[in-house]
Length: 457
Image 1 (cartoon, one colour):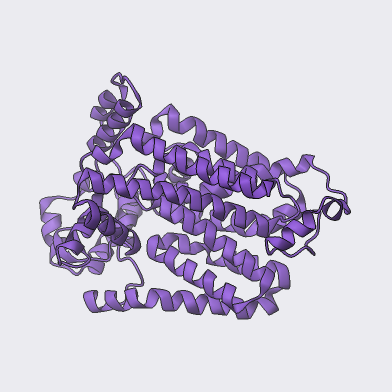
Image 2: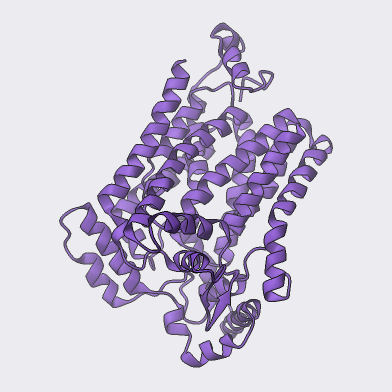
């Protein structure tokens, strides 16, 4: 009963701090804050379909994955297209996702380490109040939804490994499909899911549930892939913009991100502010001033040329340009990758928002906490957490190789918080009889968690 009350408190805390951030920072009044998501949502409601202007041409697009623009469109349908009321509704809805994230973290920990009941609430507390996770709520971007889906996808994979039930595998497959249709890069969780399932029963017995997940996920993505083929007349699984993103991160003028470093940004960042709202407004102004690499690397003639091509062909053309730029300067790609790795793990100097101490202190704190946790956690617990580590590694490698931004780091932050908390288990001794003596085994049974897992975990 006490555990149930604690869970409610954590859910309430996560939602409350996010609602407070939304109301204090007032980001829903910031102009031009919805980017492509808002444009696509407006076009959906105007009857123009899933479309936007992209690289010199306007029309049906696969530049963005479909789930989040439809979420924005739902908010627009209620509060008005592009209105501050609709953005407020959207951000408050994202605050509720904070509560769902907490429940997901608790579910994930129950599957990983059921005999350490303190681990879940502690990791959930990190997810509830970590500043960048809270701040993401105030943005019209996919990060909050993607973070929640990533945690739940892993939790369902671990559950499938425990139960070996095809119904659980089906739920994991649905979650993976939603995640991929929200942020395709996060589908890199798939190997981690397979490992989480095989941890319990071995790879041979894991084949059936893994195949079920793959089939269900593929069927979930299929309608969008068919739509893309009808629109572009070629295979596009989810998004058409990989080549474009690679060009942004690796063209001759890029510093590894999609942003531009301008001297004028410094004046905005350094101007005095009176309160949190004015501080947030200055960060948004600096972000808009920085702009995108497109602003300085693409000419009007480039847009005219790109506009004559299909959307996937535009992306392929820019990918070839990036490759040519990299070949012209051997060694530059390695430098860019190292720069992106530093930006991903530490600080992105091209993003005015990440240069704020309000961002840097908690970001660095979480990174150190996670690293120490990885070093200190017991071996058996590290083994159980290995799928989360593999997932984070794959996501990090992808962005290091392609393009990086602070928003790409947000989905892995609950996992990093979990690692840090798991390191504290080094200082806890659990006698073999503890779970029965204290009734912990009974609690785990009520939660649907198998009791036969090694108590050393």
